[in-house]
Image 1 (cartoon, rainbow, N blue to C red):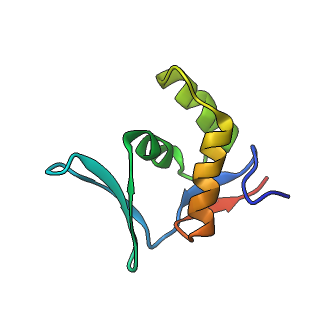
Image 2: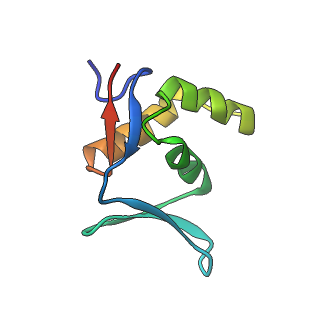
Length: 92
């Protein structure tokens, strides 16, 4: 099984939170040891990662908001955060 597949239900790790810095106009994920700056598309993905939606459902929702959404990009983004312990996934 892949770290993240279409049935994975991702969510931010308990110690990570999404913030928007209005002065800089940028989103970031904050953890006790790390700050990840992400773009608005990344923030849109993170906001949908609430452990109730699968990656396939997240992709479908984003396709309704954006013209071009590649599932592989969403999967890689989430897998990268899982690898860095910024996100967790439930399977099944």
